[in-house]
Length: 344
Image 1 (spheres, helix red, strand yellow):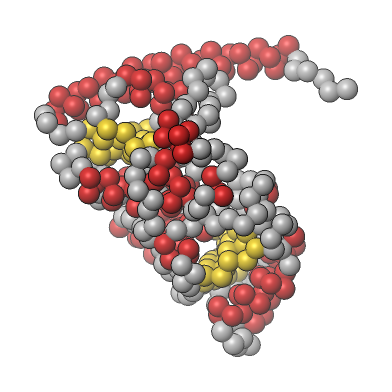
Image 2 (cartoon, rainbow, N blue to C red; image 1 turned 30 degrees about the horizontal axis):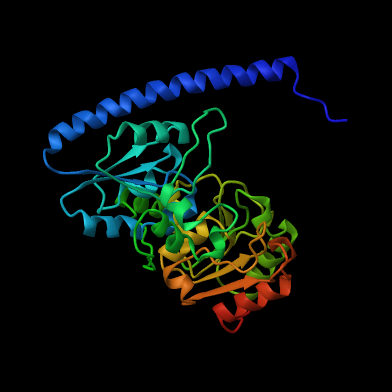
């Protein structure tokens, strides 16, 4: 028999819920006043909001939306509404005038209801609620198109679908990442080896992951077969290799520093995750490991170069999760990308 929450757990949740909701209304009021002051300075320039606040890969993949919106509003003051963790993904985009940090989906609903924006391009699917707030975020265009969390990957890649639910044409452009000089210098100061093979092994969702034993075996084979060093990026390390030509930078890089490292790679090997979208946007050749994700069997998240199959090998044992992807497939695809092995 499953036990319910304890008295302490219940009141802890209620405390966090209360403080979050109070903070949401305060944050909404502050941002509303800031946006009102901004609009008073803009004169006749419309305030245009692009709303896609979370999921690293989604934001990277949908970068072309900013360029499309700029074409439609050449004189507009365009901001991207984003969660704090992902600010750097939009902060340096030259087609944007700024960004707004979103506290939670409940706050998003409050700002939309206020009518503060002159034009909104909402890339969110309906009904992804805050765990504390009562507001239910709705995207009428997504609902009209019948796009839900249960079927969106059946309609196409992230950019193709999200641009449509924002009220734009179905976009297919190549995503771009904008790396500031500060991030380039930070990476350069590490004196990393040139032409590394960069790997990313662990995502935010276990269904996307490949076994650690396979990653360790792959790294050992790479180091024994090719002259290239191997660098692991991400938050949590997976590979335990002690070879001096292997380097773990997990948890040591910012988002844009990670993108810069990937951009200098000889090859990127990774699961479906934010860094894979970085590799696509940085024009880095890749081997990408996919697998069944919930009810999505035959799906492709990427637009642009990776969607066209340029410089990438997409591996998917259809009907099986990524964890069951045969090791031999990954090794063979990697060898095809790197060319004839050269013994170290």
